Length: 129
Image (cartoon, rainbow, N blue to C red):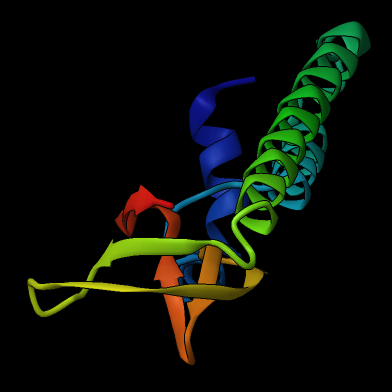
């Protein structure tokens, strides 16, 4: 089976996928769709090795679990800041100081609410007291 066959099979859903996946990140569902398209497009006289598919599936699952662990670790660090006074960069170029009220985990990452200001990124924290 050629790469062109897989690309052609996957291209049918690509335009709808681009609208919902603006960051260009493939998830486990995207991987499974590509794997199914590859299996459907394979030559029946030369079938692909099923062990290769299982190895690929195991690898994507392992990467997903590591990503989930990293996200949980980042959220845990943010929760530990609740009640502490921090200095952070303000989007306009200045700095501000305030007490962390809460931590949120969203699709775009972990953010803090500092004295009523939501959406402060952990990367913007410059000092913790």
